[in-house]
Length: 194
Image (cartoon, rainbow, N blue to C red; front, side, top):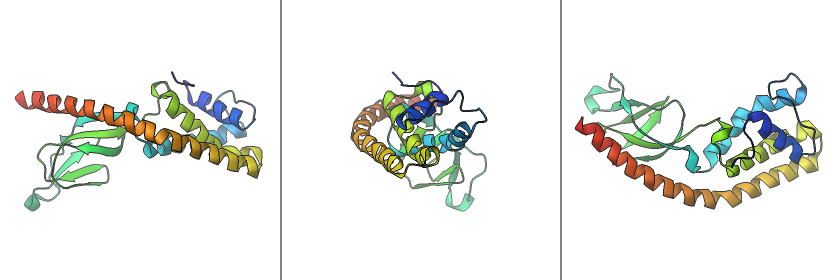
């Protein structure tokens, strides 16, 4: 169960941890709301990139782009999903690289397990919500409170939270990854039969 359902809820958790009053909406025109609105997307992206969150794992058979990057070397181009954050696993023993939102490889078929960016707070675990609001608090503490000690304390709270959650999420993610790997194999097998 998540601690919040909107970015405004997440912002208010961060403000509460700083002893600051809540905001009505992240889209309001007051200085607190504007400051938070200016950094929250990047904070979410950083937190989602930093830890292996099981709720962000996704599997997809990539679509080969019609034109090869380099015909002579048989390098194929595959479009990465729009919500792509990072590669978790590729079911190919071929070399690959990512350039400008495209996966380049010599593999003729690529099934990708990846970490997806998800700004939908209702899909986050309580742990992710906690880490996002603590990271947000550390980012806005100084401009919001003008208190260096509270700013440093907020950063420490975030780091402690991250260090506590990192091994827990790795373990959960490993289990989810195994499930996706099995699903991925079945999906590709069924796709190739058609």
